[in-house]
Image 1: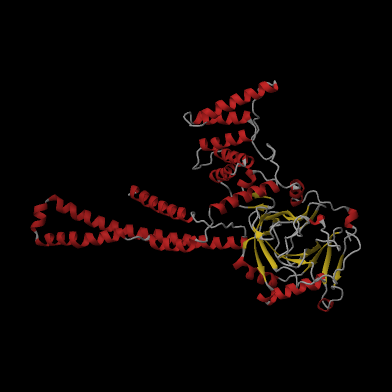
Image 2: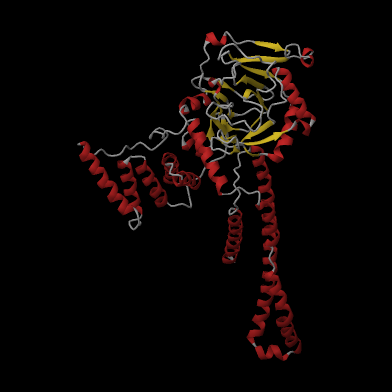
Length: 544
């Protein structure tokens, strides 16, 4: 009986694994960067679990019927085999034997050939097109590494679900950490590979069970440490690997190579051998490699709330007021509350600029069409995706719904700028590690064709609506002058990208910090130059 039960469960697990493997072989180039869309996957998974339970129930029912047949036939054969001739001497027994072999065994064969998995497979097929693929999984892993870097979180904190201000049961197993490390390793990102493989090794050494072997972890970890330039530790880790698996195909050769290389380096520098540090590898053990972003450190510090250049003198120049859009008829009876966020360049926040009902309607309209957010190629002017902008966005026209038309009109009333030449309202949802690295909203002199197709000039101003609060992370930061603006649902911020002369204000280079915990919804309006000639007249100097 035990063997039968184990065999049945093995069959179920093998079946599910094969179905999931098929599901992972889709070729969609989508990345699940929107919490709004990922919530649909939660309900999909719940439905699939229910379908799986129904399949198991059907398999158990089928097995129970087969067992009943087996018990009945076993009893009959025990009697017939004891005295075959005597048994068949009775005409009823002879008839029933003929009937069993001709009819009943055929019925049993049909029962065994029934496939209760058909319903489950059909359900999987329906949902398969919406499943994340390997690129999505890799993107999610890199998002965790992005959060790890920006908010200076060590791998152990992540693996135990300990995020700033958040208590969660979401933990990473040895196998999860190993897969994270492998993702980085396959991308030649040995810095993150070391951090995650070391965490996998630590949890395995602490007694946690895993599918991956210690030898596999040491194999990847030792080479990654070597790539980080730490030969003594690479040698120590490789020796551990050789001790576990003396016949490992690479370990022996790697160990000899590492030892010879270290001896050569020591001779050249006329130094004695120093044993590797006994301190475990952790955040800060190795320097993080530099990348393409010159203000990486200041940008990430601001995301953590560090390095904010808000002095008392500057704070004394910030005020709040009621704003009626220079006596705009629609704002006279109900002016908006305006707060100064920064003095120079001037950044303001408008309170209660979107109602909860408007927020929900905008999200409702945007969700079905959310797609990977794009940036405009400065050379061609064509919209394209970029690794430094990770979110999903949708564009909404005023004619689609009265709410969108009303929001557009409100933006015009508050700013005093026409939105006739503005871009459509863009709605963005930032999910796991969603961000937009430091960038300019306006086009620079070396990219004159960025907005040529629009025929409305450069982006003179940005109006940004916050449509959600964010539990942790997700700030808008300006690295040039050290400003941080935190999301507050129902508020909007506004700033000019161009001076009155039409020259770009390079101080407005800004970024959307990665979302650490929560879901960030924003909508923005990029207002262009054309039509503003009398609403915002030119200045007399380049920086007016």
